Length: 279
Ligand SMILES: NC(=O)c1ccc[n+]([C@@H]2O[C@H](COP(=O)([O-])OP(=O)(O)OC[C@H]3O[C@@H](n4cnc5c(N)ncnc54)[C@H](O)[C@@H]3O)[C@@H](O)[C@H]2O)c1
Image (cartoon, rainbow, N blue to C red):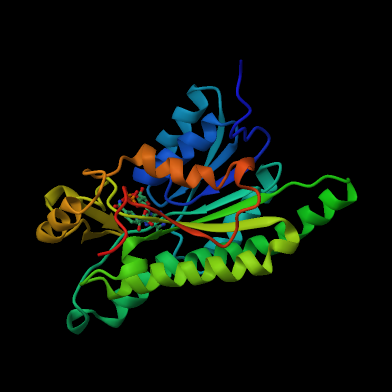
């Protein structure tokens, strides 16, 4: 017997930062569920690899290479989706990295950079999507059907509780929760649910202990991501499930908000942290 649960056939999903880590796992999961996935990343090779995996397993996917921080990224991303996909049904704001420093050592540029990637980019993407969601809702009403569309924003325990050394990242991720709540109210009329998943420790280069392997190339520059070893150990020891989450488990939480089964849930932030509920 085949299950109808989570069937996303005929849906189009846009995801930022889909080349690696959690974003890759989300893209693969949505692709397996039948969605056509438009995979963004600023690193072309991993994004293309994600698309290849989806295609090889019989799914539909395409790449959209670009840095979400660029001024016109949101407009270009949405215009490209409208031009090449059937519709815009699911948007996942996932791309990002960290640039940590205690506040007295954090420059204006480091503050702005992280606000840009984690908050301004989702704002611009979603602003660009508004006319599309509005028009699609009008078309649905005209055709006498009701389709619920989905936005999922990726936040963090850092945004909910604050992590020392992350004033830029914590502020941006907290802001994203605010944006989620506002758009859930503004877009109910278009049948769009807007939710947020705040991750705890997930086993990617970002969620692991800082080392030489957690350096990433950002615009030609080496940036050290990952977490301070003491903090990582402390957090890990307090996770009720007793371990760091996998990218598949992280993708599962986002996926729940993409399925028809969550059509009446909006404006929510769910912690996906193995039970960790404070820092
Ligand atoms: N891993 C964790 O423990 C954890 C915890 C809380 C929240 N998060 C959030 O989850 C999301 C994904 O992180 P991850 O752990 O999978 O990291 P990751 O580094 O494994 O993957 C992030 C992907 O995003 C891409 N990316 C980064 N900046 C980009 C930009 N400006 N434009 C386009 N693409 C960009 C990277 O190239 C990479 O492929 C991030 O928003 C992160 O803040 C992660």
